[in-house]
Amino acid sequence: MYTNSSTSSLLTLQTLGLSSTDIYPAFVFGTLTYLIIMFSNLLVLTVIAMNKKLHKPMFILLFNLPISDIVGATAFFPHLIFSIVAENRLISHHACIFQAFLIHVYGTGNLLILSAMAYDRYIAICFPLRYTTIMNSHNLMKIIVITWFINLSMMFTLFILLVRFKTCRTNIVDFYCNNQSLVKLICDDTSVNNYYGLATIFLLMGGPLALILYTYAQILRTCVITNHTDARQKAIQTCATHLIVFLSLQINTVFALISHRIDSSSPVLRRAFGVSVLIFPPFFDPIIYGLKTKELKQCIVMFLKRNVGLTM
Image: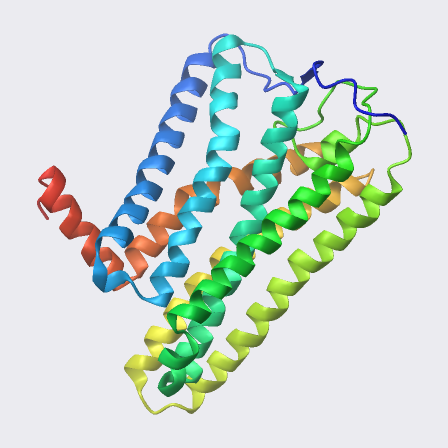
């Protein structure tokens, strides 16, 4: 094993394959997408922070989702846009590791935050009389702290294991830096990294999935036996939306991670699924939760009317 003496070297990301006529449209599309993501997520953050009636467990947990989405989008889009304009795909070793760390923090964060939100809905629907006791401010803060601690500590360990090595290659096989593509640059024995990577995939994918399936099974059971049709429909609609968001993120993430370990997998599909994880959740999360959550939607409309003169 070597100490890392290649930190000043330049790495080359996978080419975008843009012709000269595609550069301007790609630049405009990338810039607009990033600006929309930043505006919509910052809007959700601002509205939740400024409205006291949204200072409830459900919205405080939701507050963490746009933070994570902003981290992921900012790790990906600025360098992508710069590389389109500069017409090169070079990135420094330090910047590559930092980008990869932020992207993994974003992906893990979203899964854990969505799991915490599912637990909140489970308590609210299945134990409504005990909801305020269970989801008090102390327990709510513990859930948020534990969520971010698990995320940051596991990702920090993952990248501490990575930076021990000296790289012997310079070509990143994806459109952005990630742990798997960086490990492929190493010529030494990376067994420990691979085992830890598999363990994190199992824990961070399997754990949230098990929690989601259990809580939603209990929610559906409660909805079936309840006599309140309106409450049942509202609960099912909320949970269905949340489940779609969670499963779409997890399926894309699992495919992007596992395909690195399968030589016969399509690199085109791997890159497509990987990029979709960084574009679609940050873009659609604020839209989905802003439109589907009645209280939040009303507060967003009031905020826009008051600050930008929106008429509806």
